[in-house]
View: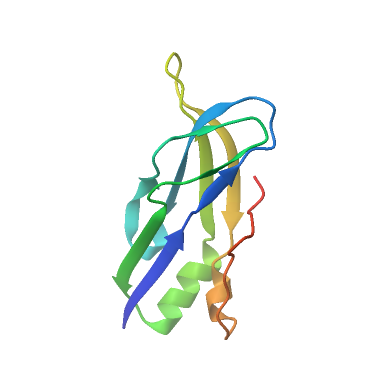
Length: 118
């Protein structure tokens, strides 16, 4: 069975008083895609929200229903928020875990206008 799973990261919101230049990084190794997906950097202002340019990714693969269920239930999407600095190495700011098993709940579900806490 040919399967396409899409991940659409739309914005990042800061609850911190410090401005950052951030990028998001995530991977889906259980779906047969090993290299991490890295978004473009964006400037985060104090207590601000910024749209993520090109935050859409689609993973296409072949799997049976049971293989897909096993991959999605056993490994949630791990999303990392990184600070990109000109003068020092990149710093991991936060990690969010997004469960993917909702695909099997029977009805379509979207996380639109919801935030994964980091």
